[in-house]
Length: 556
Image 1 (cartoon, one colour):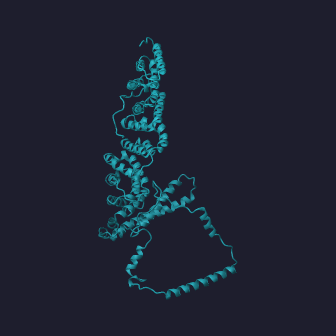
Image 2 (cartoon, rainbow, N blue to C red; image 1 turned 60 degrees about the vertical axis):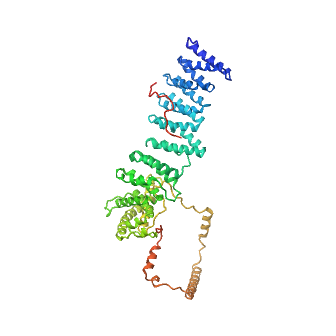
Image 3 (cartoon, rainbow, N blue to C red; image 1 turned 90 degrees about the horizontal axis):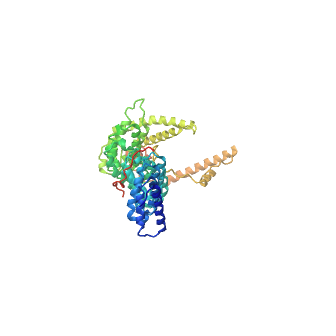
C-alpha cells in the first residue's frame, strides 16, 4: 500500500470504495480491499475522518473482519478530534441494520459516551441511540436497562436520556407489545428499582407504568422477594420505593375482597411500627394511611399482631383525660380507626379482650374471652372526646365551605379536612355501639383508589320524578276544607275497619318474656337490631459488554 502523502491515502480509499461498489457479489480480492480500509483508518487525520463511513458501509459483506472493523471504530471514538469521533458515532446504527446482535455492545459504548462536555457530540450520541431504538426497540431497551445495572457511576446520564428521548416512545410502542414482552420488562424494571436509590427511582417508576397488565399476585410476589433485601436497609433510604410498591398493591387490590398473604404485613409489624418513633411526622402519616388501605385484605395470620399494635397506637393518640390544648392528629386517627375496624373483624377475641365488644362468631375460643365492662367504658370514653372536638371542628369547616368562594386557595385544604372529620365521626359512631359496626365502606381522605358512587338517575327518570311533584292548581278555601273533611272521614273508616279486622284475626301465643313491657330477652334482641353491620364472623447482571473503559470528562 503506497500512501506517501495524506492525499494519496484518501485517493486510495476512494479507489477501494469504487471497486467494492462495482463488485456487488463477493470476489476473492474484496476482503483484501476491506483490510486496506482498516489499515488506512489509522494513517492520518483525514483518513480517520473518512474511514468511518466505509467501514460501516461494507461491514455486512465481510463477517470475518467485523470484529476488527468494530475495534477500529472504537479507536476512532477515542480520538481527540471531535469530527473524527462524531463520524464514528454516526456509523454505529448503520452497522446494526443488518446485524442486530451488535446492538447491546453499541448501547454499552454509546451510554458511556453520554458523559461528554461537547454539546455536538452529546446530541450525536443521543441520535445514534434513538436510531438503534428504532431498529429494534426491545433489544435496545433491554440493553439500556443492562447498562443501568452495570454502570452505577454513569447512571445519571442514561436516566436523563431515557426521560428526555426514549420514554415518550416507549409509552406508545410497548402498549402494543405481547403479554410476554410486557411481563419481561416489568420484572426487569422492578429488579432495577430494587437496585437503585430513592434519588433515581422517579424515572424508573414512570417507565414501569409504561408496561400495563400488572396484577395483584405479581405485586405480592415481588414484595415477598424484595422485602428481605429492604430489611437490612434504613427506612429513610428505601421509603420512596416502598411507598410506590404499597400504592401499587392498593391499586391492584381495589376490587379484591379475599385476604392476601404478603410479607408487607410482617414488615409493618416487625420493622416499620417498631421504628415509628424515629420517623418524622410526614412519614408517620404516609405509612399509616397506606397501611389502613391494605388492612382491608390483611390475612388472619398477621391480623392479631397488627391489631394489638393499632389498638395501642389508638390509646397513645387519644389520651385519657384529653388535655384542654391537645391537638388531635386527624389523618393518623382516621387511619388507625379504619385499620382497627378491618383488623378487628378478623380478630373477634381481641375485640372482646381489649374493648369488651359483644361478638357472635359461634367460635368457642372467641366466646371464652370474658367481657370486662370497664374496658368498653374506657375505649368509648376516648372516642367521645374525639367526637366532641372533631364535631366542633366539622361545624366550623361546614360554615367555611359555605362562605368561601370557589376560587379561594384554602378551599381545597378545607374540603379535605372536612372529609376527614366526617369519616372520623362515622368511625367513632360505629365503634361506640356494642356490638360495633365494622368494615365500613367509605372514601378515606387519603384514598389511593376512590370507591365508585352509585350512578345518578337517567335524565328521563329525573324528568318523570319532577312531573310527579308538579304543584297542583290551588283550590278555593271552601273546596279545600270539604276535601280535607272527606279525607278525614275516609281515614277514620279505614282505621275502624282495620281495627275490626285485627280483633277478628287469630293471635298466636306469645311467652311472657317476649310480651310488651318486659323481658330481658326482648331488650337484648332490640339492642342487636340496631342499624349497622353486627360482627359475624433474562435479565441477569453480566460483565461489561465491551472493553471500552470511557474517557472521563474532557474539555474541548
